[in-house]
Amino acid sequence: MTYKRITSFESGRLIALLAIIGLHSQVFMKTPLIFGEPIVGMFLNQISRFAVPLFFIIAGYFYYPKLVASKSKEDVFAKYAKPLIIMWLSWSVVFLIIPFNFSILLSDGYLAERSNHWNNLLANPLNTLFEGSLVHLWYIPALICAIGIITLLHKYRLDNLLLPVGFILFIYGCAAGSYVPITNIEAPILTRNGPFF
Picture (cartoon, rainbow, N blue to C red):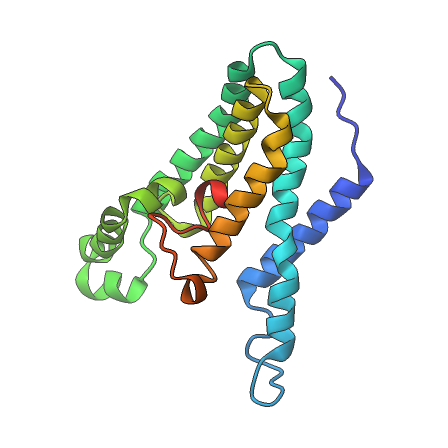
């Protein structure tokens, strides 16, 4: 099977990748300061927020036609989710083992450094399930949740509910996440994770 590149998707992915790198690198968050605030950095931080939703949209764009064409919806889901789960588990194991706080590592030893991390993971098992052993892995379980929702709705011929369900999950995710100081809605997991985005 030949894969035909879609220029607009490839360009979008490249721009989104650069936006994610800039977001995590905290570009311009220390300088220049305008009225004592990193206005340029904050602006770049906010406009970079398109990147992750774009990755979800592109993944759905390629996943849905395979789902529609197949008789076994579960097989399509399993075939797509299996490598994601393997990747998530592999990197979770790596991040369980590798120390990050070298000052504690050098002063108190490996077990002291890692036990802090392990205790944090055990204190929030539901978040750990939706993130893995490092917060940056959240995208993988979230993508599995997203394709799971798409698969279930399609299997039961409720495709017309995809947009409303996505909208409701997004609104709830925002209300119980970024806007919790206003809404006072609390969720059992960080709503940046799982099915919400």
